[in-house]
Amino acid sequence: MLIFVTGGARSGKSSYAERLAAQSGQAVTYLATAVAFDNEMKDRIRRHQSERPADWLTVEEPVDVAQAARQVQAPVLLLDCLSVWVNNLMFHDFSDGQILDAAAELVSVAGNRAGTTICVTNEVGFGIVPDNALSRRYRDVLGWVNQRVAGASDEAYLLVSGLPLKLK
Amino acid sequence: MLIFVTGGARSGKSSYAERLAAQSGQAVTYLATAVAFDNEMKDRIRRHQSERPADWLTVEEPVDVAQAARQVQAPVLLLDCLSVWVNNLMFHDFSDGQILDAAAELVSVAGNRAGTTICVTNEVGFGIVPDNALSRRYRDVLGWVNQRVAGASDEAYLLVSGLPLKLK
Amino acid sequence: MLIFVTGGARSGKSSYAERLAAQSGQAVTYLATAVAFDNEMKDRIRRHQSERPADWLTVEEPVDVAQAARQVQAPVLLLDCLSVWVNNLMFHDFSDGQILDAAAELVSVAGNRAGTTICVTNEVGFGIVPDNALSRRYRDVLGWVNQRVAGASDEAYLLVSGLPLKLK
Image 1 (cartoon, chains in turn green, blue, brown):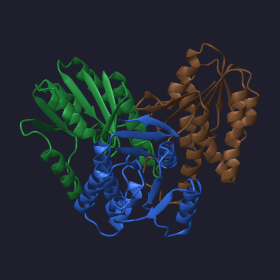
Image 2: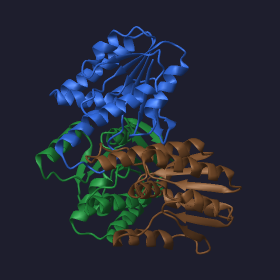
Image 3: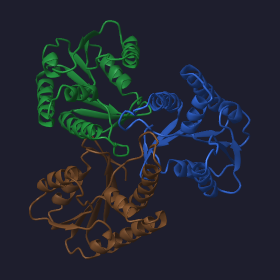
Image 4: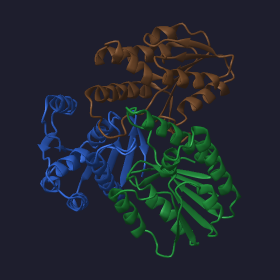
C-alpha cells in the first residue's frame, strides 16, 4: 500500500501524512531525508520533530532512501520528503537518469513491503519559470519523480491550505 | 458561516468570491486590505473596484482587520484578501506569533458574526523555494494563516483558471 | 468540443492531453506554439516530439494560432501550449488587449470546428509575486487567457504529479 501526499510549502502536507500514519494505530518509522546544514534548516527540522508522536522511530537518510526503506520493520513507513531527497541527489551529482532509477527502486521497495508506505513531496512547478538553470532542472526532475511515485500509488492527495484534495 | 476562497494570481478567486456575495441577494460590505503605494498597485485596485456592484459599501483596513470586521453591519462581509493583509502585518513588524494571533482573532470575529464572512487569499507556496529569506518567511506565515482560516471555514474553494474546486 | 488541460511544469499535462487525443481513435493535428531559440529549448521540443505518435501531423505556429487552427482538417486538434503562445505574443509587442482579443478569436475558431480541440496550458500564478514587472505582466495575462479558454471549455482538467483533477 503506497500513499502519495503532495502540496505546496506550508500546505499542511506533512501534518496530513502524519495524521494518516497515526490513525493507522500501528507502529510508525519516520524516514527523514533532510539534513540540517544551516540554522534556518535546523529550526524547521526541530519544529517538525516536536510535532510528531514520541514513540515513532526516526531514521535519517539523505541519499540511499530505498536501502533505508528496505530495513524498516514497522508496519507504517512515513517518508518525508521526496523533494528534499531529490535535492540531495542533485547535490551529490546524480544524473537525471540516476535519480529516476533511484525513484523506481524506491517504488519497487514500497511495493514489496508488507505494510503501508506514505511518501510526502512538494509541488514546485506552479510558478513562473525560474531564472536559473539549476532550479529549472530541479523542478523538471522532481516533477518526473513525483509522477513516477504518484502513478504507482494506491491513494494520492493534494494538500491546499491544510485541506486534502483526493487525486486518486 | 465562513467561506474560504483561495487560488493563484489571476485565478479568478476575487471574481468568484464577489459572485458568491452577489448571489446572496443581501447587503455586502467589502473589506479591502490593500493600500496603494505605487501606480501599478493603484491600477490593480481601480480595476478591481470598477468590477464590483456600486451599492456595496467599501471599507479599507490594512492592519486591524478583526476590529474592522467587528464593526460591519451588513449580512455579508467580503474580505479581500488575507495575503495582502499578512504582507501588511509583516511590513509593520508583527512577529509570526502576533500574525497567527491576529488570524485567530479574525476567525473568532467571523464565528461570532450573524451573517456570512467570505475570505479571499492567495496560494503562494507551489513554486521553487524563493531565494530571499523575507519571501520564505512570507510564504510560511501566509501558509499557516490560510490553514487556520480554511480549517475554521464551513466551505472552501480553490480557483484554477477561473474554475472552482471544492476543498470542503 | 473544447477540452482545457492545465498544470504546473512537469505535471504531466502534455502527456495527458496526448492520451486524450490518442484515445479518440481519430486523426490528430498537433499545433506547436514553441519555437526553439536555444539548446535547452531544442532539447525540450525534441523530447516532446519523440513521445508523440508518428502519424500525427505537426504544425508549428508561434503567433497566429487562430489562423493555423482554422486550417486544420483533422478531427482532433491538439494545441500545446497557450502559455508559450502568450509568451510569444508578448515578445512580439502585442498589448494585453490584443492578446485577449487573440484568445477570444481562438475560442471562437475552436467553437466553430466540427471536431475536438484540446488546449494545453500552464499554471504560473501559485508562487511568490515575481520581482520583475515583465513576469508579473506575463502571469496576469496568461491567467486571463486561461480563464477565457477554460470558461468556454466543455471539459477542464488540472494535472498534479501526473494525475488529473476534473475542474469541469
